[in-house]
Length: 112
Length: 116
Image (cartoon, rainbow over all chains, first blue to last red; front, side, top):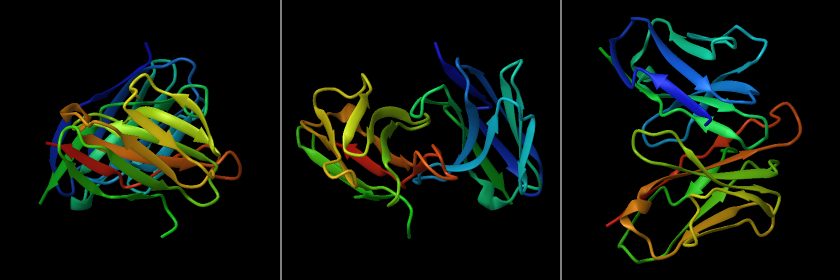
């Protein structure tokens, strides 16, 4: 069964600190992996996309990694800001254009 | 704003009533998707349109649910005889089969449904 599992389920950090969110997937066939940020009451917004051949990709303070051998991805947030408080969802595309498998997300709270 | 828009943003209804949601995709996008998201979970796929054709429906889409995209532009999702279990955020997304945004799904803000 295709699954995407994320950890931790929730995380509280202080402003300015770094954090790393984890995503493990058992999806076949694998096309790509995206990290989305979802603010409360809003739709998800794409942060970064990783294909099979990419190991690391950065988008500002966000850095995503992908290990296709172990089927693991991480999202590292540097120098966190209050506006980073949101849910971060790992999404794997499996083959077809509409085959997105979503993780349950990690709820991040950044406190002053 | 040229993003995906959804209307209404919030809907409160009584059990047994019918509700209809609207989604306006990004204008040049030919693909449109509906998802349902419950609290603390990721979105779950409901259905997918390419232009006006509904090409795939999830088993989650019971007979009480119907979606249309009559002219290949906006789409509506109707839920008949609502149940409390239908309470969720209903997300719409659109994508293009062409161009630099090829197959990236852009999400709308969602419609939050509460069934009392």
